[in-house]
Image 1: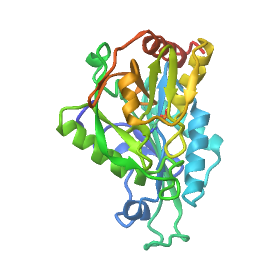
Image 2: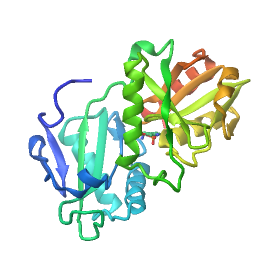
Image 3: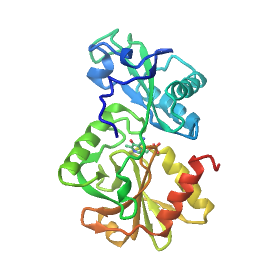
Image 4: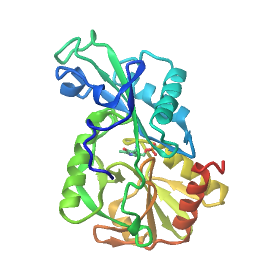
Length: 292
Ligand code: PMP
């Protein structure tokens, strides 16, 4: 990824209803979202000029805002059109699109009923989330120290910024130790997900993946479940205990940014990049590139 700072680029950002020059898309430091994490966002990818599952992403954005008790002052159709406009204006037939909605500076303090919802949409190139050289061996995951919270301890069904505090901390700790990412357990000590992607395992020709009852049921996760069913691969959604990883043969992550990423190692457990992983990775690549 380019190291040009994200505030100092050419191009256009959709900002509260219209495209503005990239560097002018600024907010006030007393925005409620900045202080109290009243922020929701999406991450979606365009392939060959089309944003994959755009409507699902926009629906999730609106649902995330509702979970955080604020309304987005546009229709879903308007946000869909704005996302397409952003990718076009920045000449990104293949790229990453980031809508974000937050409570503004109209009221400061924990209560925020008088704030307005602000919305911005940016787009940029994001070729590969993990180093493509790890495609054949798989990435290495550390075991995170932070656990995903219970659904009555945080709004876990929302794609809300506040939930990413522990993801950033976990990813930093993992990278410091030479890993690519971290696997997080949940509040019950069951396997949950990586810091920005869902996790699947393969054992005896079947897929095993945790029930998404305290973390995001990713759009890529649901897509890959559909692809696996099409291939006649059985999917077992269930609680997974960490020590079960010793018996799993393959592992991969799914996410909009990560796509289908093979995992070679999680802490003490090793996996091979086997046929099911390769098949679903390739099926996903075909699907998103228009072979729908
Ligand atoms: N979990 C987390 C924490 C994520 O950030 C993401 C990426 N949005 C996912 C799972 C996967 O979601 P999706 O497939 O919808 O991108």
